[in-house]
Length: 163
Image (cartoon, one colour):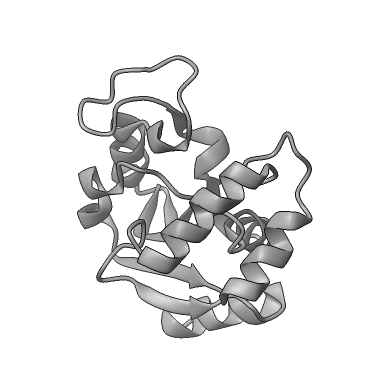
């Protein structure tokens, strides 16, 4: 959806949704990927899987490609995480990863209600394991310190882009 397209990735609890809301408040074009593109499916084939857990949290690849191919905005930010990002990550001009330390991540996850992903102890453990292993982090991403207030995080993203 943009002449330039950016992916803002990160583990659950790093602030992707909050950053997306802040970008939208600034009048920038941003997509809540976890709300608008996500479903439970096989990360390799894209086939839907009912009742699956986070391991099957993926984005609709055709929708992602369609949005990227639409050039009606100067820039578009895709905010969220998906287990199938390798299937479309090469289409983005820049990929950012929001990073926080373990203590910040624990604090944020513990504040979540039980019905939100990461709000249950087993989900927190899974996220903390990913944090330790960095298994869900795109390798070539630009790291952004997301422990700072959201407006500082957004300014850091935009500064990296020369905005």
